[in-house]
Image (cartoon, rainbow, N blue to C red):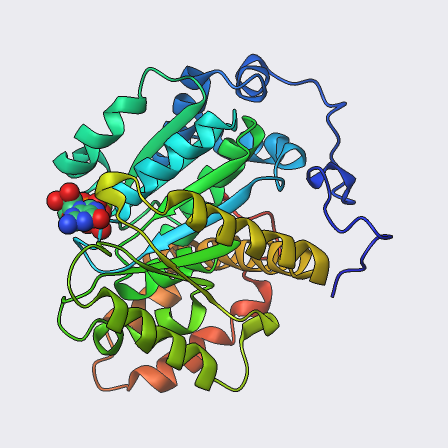
Length: 348
Ligand SMILES: Nc1nc2c(ncn2[C@@H]2O[C@H](COP(=O)(O)OP(=O)(O)O)[C@@H](O)[C@H]2O)c(=O)[nH]1
Ligand SMILES: [Mg+2]
């Protein structure tokens, strides 16, 4: 568990943390350009991350002290609920306040090279000339460490580039996307009236982690009933995560209505996180998860390498149908104490 430092629960960035790395290390021009908020440098760093560029690790190590400050808000919910439209409106709202905004959209239907859904592209493109907004869409598989690991890494870059707020959009299907939501400081679940029994059909896990419920398309019939159903659900629950009672917001994202109220709810949640110390707790959890992710990736890679390169492993894995996998894995695991004795090859 981390120690809380004095009354100020919000570090300006990770540089106050005992990372052992300080900005005193000579920064290369890419890092400097990122910290100055140059959009092209941010794009390049993100491509490095997605392609597992050999310089990625050092880049992220150097950027780390400059990260940790942005408020990360995840928007999740069924396809068609209006997440992208809402995100677009929230960007406008934040830009009007002079805030720098980063957006990461996870599109489960397309690989990295495929980019965003056309609809998202068309809407988001309105911001593309604005240097205060950085938008990136990513495929649902992520790079070697998985989707959540890639999201963590992209967040470092956005935070270091000076984003005040980072908006994440996911459809919220599958474990990978749930993991991404666990990266967010504030989770917004977007529901719509009339889309069947919205509350019942929403994935249970997502209902559990939502900090704010949005009833979007609130001009449609059934909006009041959905709001009442959510209110009942929130009130009936005896205990809430981190003692935060989720807020319920109504929006008509298509017409830009209710955005101010929604943003106020998001800010109220952020303030609650600061005041209770959960802001730090969430960052600590993120840090822990990411460290474990990195270690898992190294272990996985090392196991696969052994399976191909070590004759003993090769024989046991490829020539023993009569031996059950449980016995074989136990035998191979007995080799592990020496597995990482030397520096691991090609660490991510
Ligand atoms: N009637 C109505 N339609 C909306 C509203 N907000 C978004 N939409 C429409 O809903 C559709 C899906 O929106 P989109 O933002 O792409 O949803 P996503 O899949 O959750 O990102 C689009 O045709 C939007 O124009 C709203 O408040 N009311
Ligand atoms: Mg969308």
